[in-house]
Length: 338
Image (cartoon, rainbow, N blue to C red; front, side, top):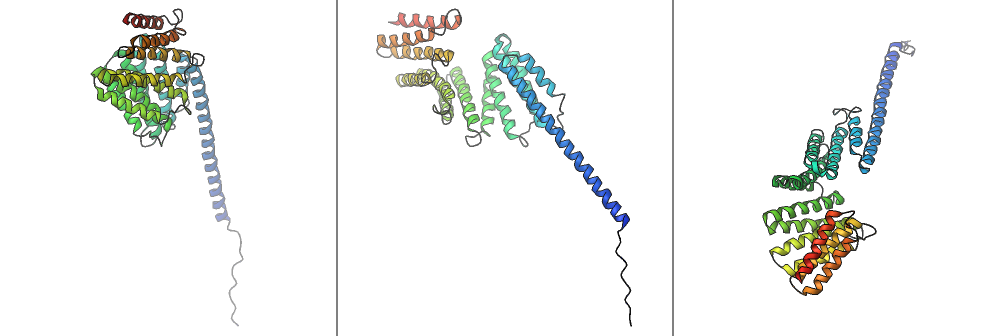
């Protein structure tokens, strides 16, 4: 009979198993290395967040030099290659800090703002539109603010134009759907920029553009949701309407200004926001005075003076001498006109 050759007994293949074991070991080691890198990366990110929080608190306290030291220490933890977003945002935060320093050191504001602009520009070397669009256009928003303040500091109209360009760039990304808060905030700032440009160039079309921007802002900043932001835009609107009254529809524009200032005063009270309250009361006084030039001279002058006196409750000569003198001048002008 024919016999079949028996199959060889199944035995472990030592070399194969050795190779398999080595392969598994390599995978385990590689996985451990990758996992270890991930853990280290997360630790670094947590350190960065902690330092940023510390620096933010220092900025809130007005301790700007210490805040800058903290931001500078972040660069010792990371490289632009491994952490491009964090590296760029750290420069962005330095830019915000210099911008805040400019507001507290008006004598050297121009220098601080130029430092701010440099930091913002440098951050864009690492924060690209393609990879990080939200942060990229956030930096553009910051650049708009810095250039708008730089215009206020040195009066160069080109700074104003640059600010408008950056705000418009930011709005190409920050729609009301993408981020309503940024959308509204940028439109409010853009409205301020167009107001300044319209007044400089005596161009009512620019003032109308400002009005459109404020109205866009109020689509989000409603009194029942964002009351403080709403009040800020209403004060800006009041000033805009007063400025527009010089170009036509004088009475209706002044009345619109009075309405806007009163809207702001529904939010700003002397107890909750005394400085804002006094500022708007002074502006309201100016609006009533302008209306007194058109009708009901005596009664509207009295309304103007009443508003001015409300402002003086906050703008005392001891605490706010410059503002106090300005309001006193307005009261004298009002009484002199009767």
